[in-house]
Image 1 (cartoon, rainbow, N blue to C red):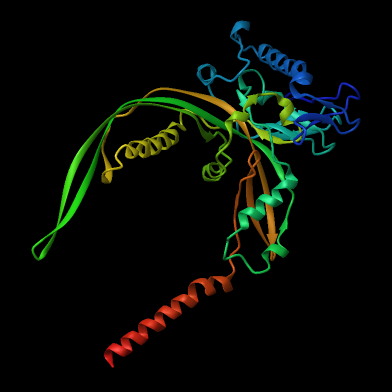
Image 2 (cartoon, rainbow, N blue to C red):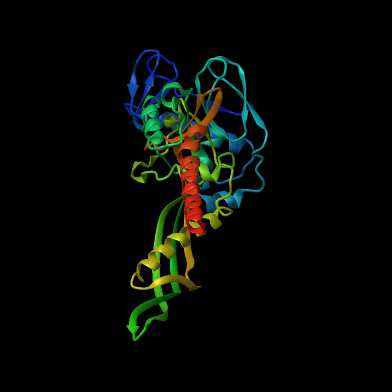
Length: 376
């Protein structure tokens, strides 16, 4: 069986849980509160030691000084032969003794039998220890306000939606992300034009002048996020941005207690095209900003090259929940740091007709009247 770890209260030995409101880990049994780093440094080291011992007993052969205490993709992929991230793994709950079956990428979960918070050592220690984490800032109870804000000015919502929709249970989870840093060097040639118009005799003349605009540049980009989970839709995760990376803090598994989390299962090298696309879009906007006196600016030749890049592995807070209305379920997600909400919205057929159908009929009637008047 694979190994798991429980953060326990030093006063009563009950399991601890991270409290969003206080930013501390608390014991639900005796009420004790502890600073995450002060209390759990030793526990975290114990977890790392256990994982290292497991690697050694498995015959990893890595030298002691080469053991990674923080994720490094370059070193990790040197050792990576072929990971088996599909299927399930078996764990033994240290509190109730039940066998718990979880997916191979799960990093933290709750025991389905005793509801205690489980940290799965395989996926958060040694070479898989994330570089950083942003802890949850928004309380689940605050999401109703964020949802109402999301509903504002949605003119096609059903008339009674605000009174009758029901927000269901909220799940907090940490999603693995890659944060890329990169440096670009080179140049770009753009095409642009200017135009002037004047009257000569009976004619209005427009003269258009075309230009080739050469730009040389060096640019650095930091913390470009790409979700590192194949289970999470890229469009969904992109829509929940931005995150405030000033809240990044050193990873500690104590932050995971009480939440679901998974390790990465996508390759950061394979995600580079997504990063390149985002960088190029930003680069183009910056370059166009230097050509504001020209019209119809477009790229003729892009010579910018990415000559340096690096990636960090972080965990970011996300909420998932559903809302029920008129017998249908609508899915939502929220940024656990900022409260930004995205999701599905029902559409009122009556309002759709009111906003689109009636104006169309009015325009059609006006057009028919004008045609009748002209032909009459």
